[in-house]
Length: 108
Image (cartoon, rainbow, N blue to C red):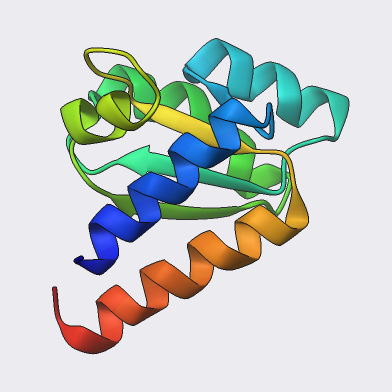
């Protein structure tokens, strides 16, 4: 199993446990409520979607990782495609960050 697929499996697990929110608007709302721990942004997210979420994340000092395509990220959460998934749980975020760092280390 590649580390990207491991990351996407963790996102899917988080969805089943209601530990993630899906989409730009739900992620923005979680940021505003102070619930968001980590954001996962699709590498091919549209500039419009990025403009809605990235400055907000940076302004609130919330970590963001960029990985997978919008279709891959959407597939992990039962959608055709999605630009962003927000993680609400610190332990899940830690596991996702570890999978992402493994990916960076292995050069995938």
